[in-house]
Length: 203
Image 1 (spheres, helix red, strand yellow):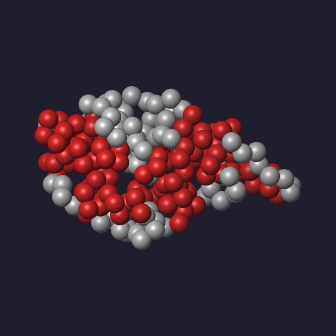
Image 2 (tube, rainbow, N blue to C red):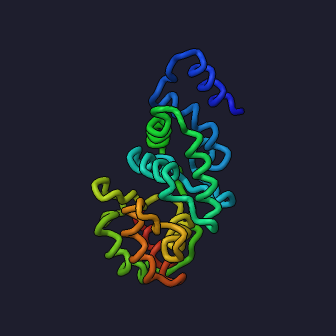
């Protein structure tokens, strides 16, 4: 058992409550680091995106979805299934919020471009995305739309494919996913590459 989880168990066993907040989140993140990296800069080979600097509200919303089954339930979504099991391990009150706060506190890690596409062609498609994600890709909390600019381009492409192919956004509990899916259904592989290439210009 990782030291952070062992420590948490010991505290609860003694009748106390673990300290919450960024410090607690940093301890819990020890179990996330093997995939996402100690700097939360991501690892494409493991299917783990860069998450450092994502807003706490968005990290919490996605962990909540993994815990509730709104995300990570499709049998073909191997990365999502893996994340669901990790999210369920955050089973003490305040754990999800603590991890979210910690991740949000980390500086963003510069991401190299890996998706080849026509950014000029993707600009027109992004007009639809900008209604929620913002013209500069900074996201809109009120709409549950995360920032896109500066994060892993390969992950954007993979998630658009998952929305399009029904691996994500089909749960009745996933309101934002249900909004994303119809937009993704119109995108070919080439269009996804073009769109993601344009998003990368917003860094």
